[in-house]
Amino acid sequence: MSVASTWVAGRLGVGIHSGRSAAGISLDDLVGLAIRRNPRRAHLLVSTVLGKHVPTDPRLVYAAGRLLGVLTAGELAGTDRVAAAARAAGVAGLLARATDAVPGAAAELLAAVDALAEDAPVTPAGTVVVGYAETATALGHCVGEALAVPSLHSTRRPVAGVAPAAGFAEEHSHATEHLLLPEDPTFLAAADTVVLVDDEISTGKTALNTIEALHADRPRGRYVVAALIDLRSGADREIFAQVAARLGTRIDVVTLASGEITLPDGILDEAGRLVVELTAAAASRPAASSAPVTRVEAWPTTVRDGGRHGFEPAHEAPLVTAAREVAHVVGQQLVGERVLVLGFEELMYAPLRVAQALAEDVPAGTQVRFSTTTRSPVLAVDDPGYAIRTTVTFPSHDAPDDGPGPRFAHNVAPGDDSTRRFTDIVVVIDSPADTAELSMPGGLVDSVAGWCDHVHVVVIPAYRP
Image (cartoon, rainbow, N blue to C red; front, side, top):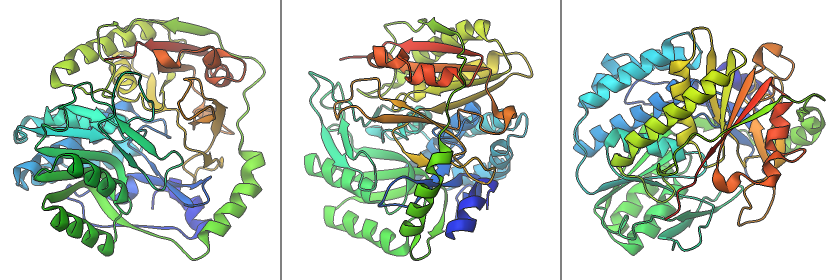
């Protein structure tokens, strides 16, 4: 069990048990544990490779996503050669070292995954990738990039003038409505194979809901569900088989690791008690003095920022170039050696590539990490054995269609450990989120400014069809 799981395991009796992995990766290396502020689900699996709730080396995040894409390529081609090559290359050991923050391990992992990608089978024509908002938008993009196919991610932000292609519900989520808003109305209709990408498969209901909706609109012969981890029970797997048979289609699953989470009786009540008991001590309040703020607007207006309306392989090179340009500007403004690039809810891939470019461009000794803000409310406990040690809370700042509400930046404040403090925080948002609420007292910029020496605000023009 990972160190970041011991607090929850000891108090709630939650168990993490690794199962089969095509690449030999242990479930323990991919997740830690925290407690949700959600009466329907007590525990939260906190990914160590997603870059959502935990500041992570961006090269590890990108490598994990590309590795999932490479394994998916093998599944689509009907060969286990790719998985065998991943085991032979030792990606499991490299990933374990990278999640333990061993210097140089993330770069070594990425190089190994890039080598695997060069020998991966060609993806069949007519394949598209759909990633789930908000946690898997960058992950889905990484899979699409590895497969060299068009990608799209779901969104909770309606866009005037763009008709939804499909909608579906994520039953355990705190915000359940998803939309698919491709600019090209034939994006999904023309696809023969749809790859659905999420950070985890717990029961698989979200994926099956999506498949049912997509299949009702346009029946197709194959779906692939790709995720970092697979926690389905035997009964859940049987339901997948039953749905595939009923729809007359094929549903495959590809993951980096699988396993089981065991939960004791009464866990919801005990988790609720802990939330009430520890809430008052969990809030991270900024210091009285705030860091200076610099705005950076170096992203070209002609470069698409992500997959909300669809993303073609030809869009990738301009995005990477734009990310490098932003990283170069930010790199000249850094005031210290611990840097966090903080993306914004669904906007994950562009900030990830900015963080990756920055990590490759800064002087030796400078540490760059990546994470994003979120809608997910989680109990924070400042203990090394707990995955969410601090939380900064601020109001929404992008005029969301479902109304205003609190938003969170987990593990951004250092808590009791001063070595976790960032010298620079690079807040990367898209233009609809560049509002008065962003910079008002108590807003996102003001809130994180209390926990660093300098804030750099990067505004990316949102692509609108």
